[in-house]
Amino acid sequence: MSEITPTQFKKEWDEGRRPILVDVRQPDEWEICNLQEFGAKLIPLGEIPQRFEEIPKDGDIVVQCKAGGRSAQAQRFLQGQGYTRVQNLSGGILRWSDEVDSSKAKY
Image 1 (cartoon, helix red, strand yellow):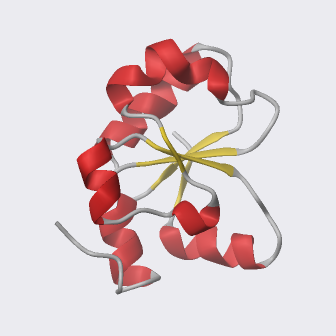
Image 2 (image 1 turned 90 degrees about the horizontal axis):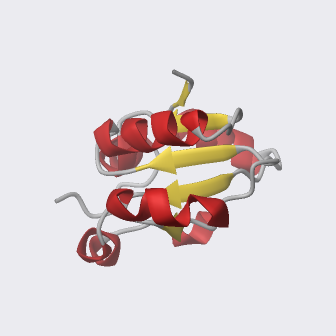
């Protein structure tokens, strides 16, 4: 499984890499904190099987959730659908808050 840490993601973003960021949490979690400023798109894990075609296959994709478990499930699903450039954001939004931006609320 390919992973990227929040620190690596932010560094690469600052260097110009623009992956598609897919947040697989629930809408109420998104409202608490999100990475919308990095173009994050909310597709809850339970909706991935119906909505995965909204995610372009030809781009770099990073999936994220609260701590990394749900996004790992989404990553495996997408890979099973033929997506080859999918990374899991290791530690999710909690690790993002610890490593990159402490203003992101933990819950």
